[in-house]
Image (cartoon, rainbow, N blue to C red):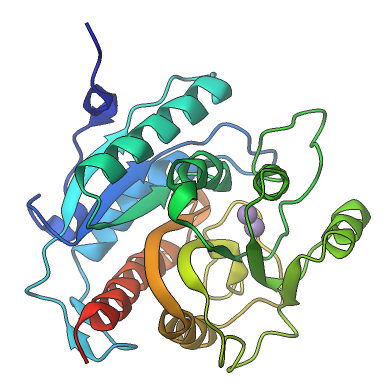
Length: 292
Ligand code: MN
Ligand code: MN
């Protein structure tokens, strides 16, 4: 008997307390927390972000939109085999493909989990993708990390090797090897010093997938991440960039928000900000879809 990808899912309290329904947005929790070398805890992020979302207004500042009438289809968390990173990546890709096949008209929103989840998700959505847009303090472009090829510090290099076009924003922490790799391969990298309003001005990006590693934000605003790095973006700077980015795109084919670590957070600051970013992106995407 063929096993449906849906058996991979585990029920969770729905995002923002909104009951599942057919919706222009599908929320999927991906609690992968397998390859961290510093502070573990990202596995607790999907449920904490959902809880935070239930306690803030359903409003998008960037879009100027009340979101109360926009439903979310929260399909729960992906159940992942403990200690089996390769198996986890296979299952995440399988579920991402299933979500795409079943709700192709909806925008999937993946709540990590560690940043490695972006690898199988982007592989699943690959055919529709023009640009992968990454916000991150780190490049995640190492060839290997302690001998491992597939982890949070290498995944973006793996995607680039597979031909994915990347624009990277907000970085400020590099290994020499990564810098050289990015230069040699002409990867567009705008560091935290270089990103400005207007970064996407006048561009036509086509269909984009947006990956937000929460450590792109300054630790003052997002203390609950596994690898905090000083000199990060302010939330309002990130919001302006996202607004420009969505305006410069034809379609946002998916989003992930990764690397929230509730175990090292302070008063859920980072989970609340992650939840708010979801609302902002929903507002911007919804606004983009409406006829003008
Ligand atoms: Mn990252
Ligand atoms: Mn990072």
